[in-house]
Length: 414
Image 1: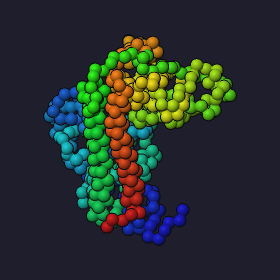
Image 2: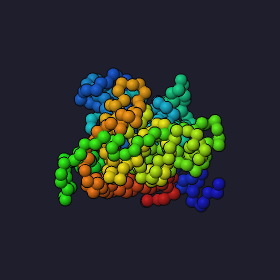
Image 3: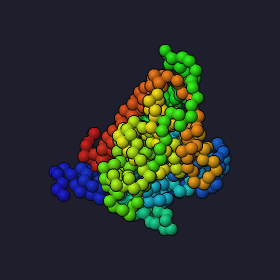
Image 4: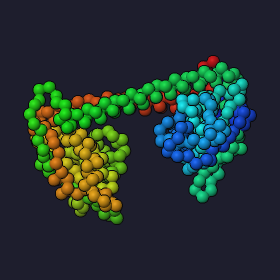
């Protein structure tokens, strides 16, 4: 590959000629393993573990604790410490996050604490470098695997190649730019979490009649699901008959629903069946603007199919009657997931049947117009959440591109 003037090829990729690549061991003051003492669900000092290293920062949920004063003195973290996960599955080894001093904490034995030489290396810059693609690629080269567990020890960690700008000021400028990108991402994450809470509260009030919309009054009705929609099951054509497959009929599996990640509309499926496959199995055509719901193993995951579909046998599908708003019924079903799981009893293999669902009672407005008005409010909330999540995905994509450009000097800030 041709390298343009002013740049050079190195083990981390192409970098400016005035940058260096140094092994991590020359840039740190210490590399230490964490505490192996037993922790518990209660205590006054958190013990950070691999699961708390998320996206380059510390996730302060799902914590364990210690009261052992000797361990606390020995392993107490200081702001700017970089934590590196040294052993787990191949995908998880090398996860790195920076401790910013948010709460007093120590670190567990499967982690390595890196203390940088502040005269040579900015800890935020190091954290970004270790999370970059070229570092993840290096991790894959040097890890050891034994009995299904991958491992990188402190000596191998010290060999990590670190691209270095000629001045610490440039490191700081790069770290600041990426920190700004992180701040935007974090603000969007917090906003989305808040909007989700607001939507959850709105669902609890609007879907139970606790809060009524202007212009509507009167008692809600109690109806069985079988009085609100036709309920249909699905089926799977023989997998050894190729003529049953790869046709033009959408065939939905639970994976298609979970892949929507909460988005309520289904418009495509990963697999399709032929007309012959449909006729040869118990699969049925479900018309557009119905609701497909998982009913086996994973219970109660719903979507509104925007186009006609068939499903496998892990579904119960609702074709609403004319006096029922499909969007309202969708939101109502979403809130009943735990109730549907309870219908499965104590069975090891969870499955809810058509008869159980048909007799399941729910409360709803007698007038379809009120159902539609409630669904419209919740749909607007969903649309806002969807737009924010798209913005968040874009911000993460932009940050990833920034890391590739800034950490290899393709874009200079100083």
